Image (tube, rainbow, N blue to C red):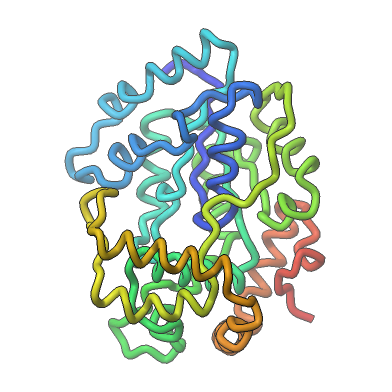
Length: 309
């Protein structure tokens, strides 16, 4: 395809992606052009849910050419943002390299944005997302113990979160200059610096500052634990957003419960989960995080990442 200033945001999940999509990529005043809510379901169909034996990059690029054309006509930076492009770890879907290869076959060496998060917090967020989406397993059953028998693996695989390997693969496919890595922790601590780095990478010209509001916030730990039980009764519809009255009622109930329930009620559950994760991955990411810090230039230790002693 002809050269463009296309940016592809591949996730990861639970790294502030919903805020980026709704508050930044979907807002023309931020200098970007995307879908109405900033998230591309077409990207899921074209690169994730496609038949790998029938994938055609020419057909794929045709789906996005109108977006590229309209963005060009308006002088905006076109963005394809879809966290599922980086895999779907809450449900055991791991296809990062395959999707990246399809993206490069389709668009060439375009700019790739990878958003990351400290791994212990990420594992917990992925688990809570899995339960929110209908999961019924306990935390240990989802992240494993590290002692699984040969041929078995947990749904949420800790090794997936070794970010240095993702960065290396992206750099090999599109060139290091075309890869931008931004930590969620920077978004939270210094949103102006976060956006300045993003705009410098993409070339977008923003005329406003977005609202810093939490998007797609999860349920409290206690409500999440309760959901593992009620999810056995009210199963989500796997073929679309239309859900049963029972599931809609329970989601509304938990949302309202979280508004009035004292936060202290969740502390015990939260502390146990954090300890379970610490026991599972203590020291596990240190070497990977040191490499990630070296490649990106971020002081990841100050952001809470484990870099070892």
